[in-house]
Image (cartoon, rainbow over all chains, first blue to last red; front, top):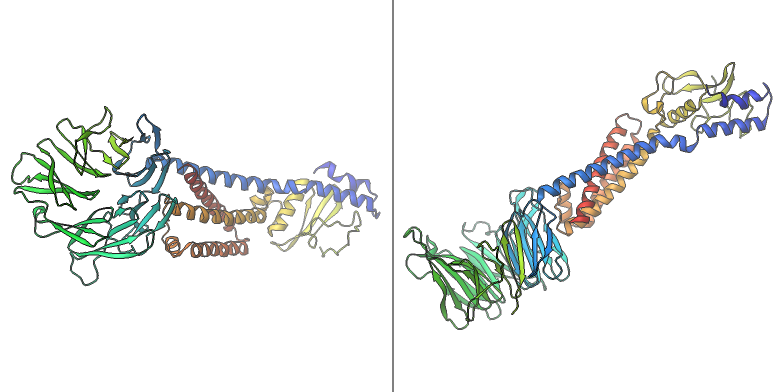
Length: 384
Length: 184
């Protein structure tokens, strides 16, 4: 018993009605049961719950962030940027266009502004089997395929990021994409749609969409595969037999509706390995068919679509390709140092990739190149 | 013990004194040979009880009265024993749950729009694809209904720990999302 608590009542004579004593007793009760005293246990429990929750969240973020290998670190170098992460980049399929670079870091799609060095995470690794996003890049947009719903690889969609307005959006009408890599040229997006119902299993539709105007249009249908896009040109391949040698390559000029039907692999014992558009030219790599001979030999060829002039850019048993962009074709020779040459012709010039270049061909745009060194990506500006 | 009449603020010291709004009709503070004592009717046992007055018991009595729990000395629940106002704590947790749910919605919309996250919940993913408004109405509506239901069922012993666990989980999620958005 708290003796202080009894004082007011003891002070009052028994049976006496005394408003003053009653007031004192009320004050005692108010003191003993003050708001703060009643509040304290509940407030303490509440704050502990909130603090533990926040701590769990922070811990989960630290663990998940470390596991996914991001955020990445971007450091300025003399020529451009070096991108790395504490766990090493699980990097592949980097691409550059204009002043932007996009790379796939273990399924995490990231964007680097080559001017400011600012990175943006475009897409986190999918929890579904789709795994990594198949992406494409132009000077204005990035686009990539992704699961429409988590863990549902049967429903894909194409997401895009506007590099100028810094805005993400879902590409309208692309819910039929089949998961293969789309192609971008400026604001023109191309993708392979699912085959129509009841159609032949090899019947594929290539769709086109102007992301700026929202105007959609069909490009081609058939037993085809979307290739590349550049300017007003879009390229796709068509199986015409059982081997790469029998493959037909189609290029369409969307501005004039002119169509080129090309058979790139004309030499016996060769097969096509990579075909790209840059400028108004088509460049491709021919490898000696490994089933015919074990001796390697590579030939890189180029076709100027407007003039029809076809020429060999490089060839040899120690030639590796192929990369193209910004009106240039890139390959490497016996020294493994990458060389670039304008598709309109001219001397091949070495690219500024630094001394620790390990031989993987850089990707190129009209103003920048990017290449992999061990587990990092490096970029450099190109002076024209 | 009979019900104590309303006194309009004028009380007779030594006869009775209202000891709290919630308890005013069922308890009184009265003199006893050893000092003061509470005389009250336990709502759970439906029996008249007397307990010596201490400041701690005054708080326990108010806590028990507010939560509709027993405050008999040997039988009071741990929350009453520690003066933990379950209803008050539950109210704060439910408000926090509702606000954290709103924060989760806004952060998720922002993270998904920024491409930094995908909605892992299949049901919410469906509504997100239907639009931000649909997702917001569904999520806020569902949680608001749950909050109201939990408040209605607040007398059940399982409600407070369940609400605490839900709130803790949602606060953890919001902290995770906020960190991801701030640092990515």
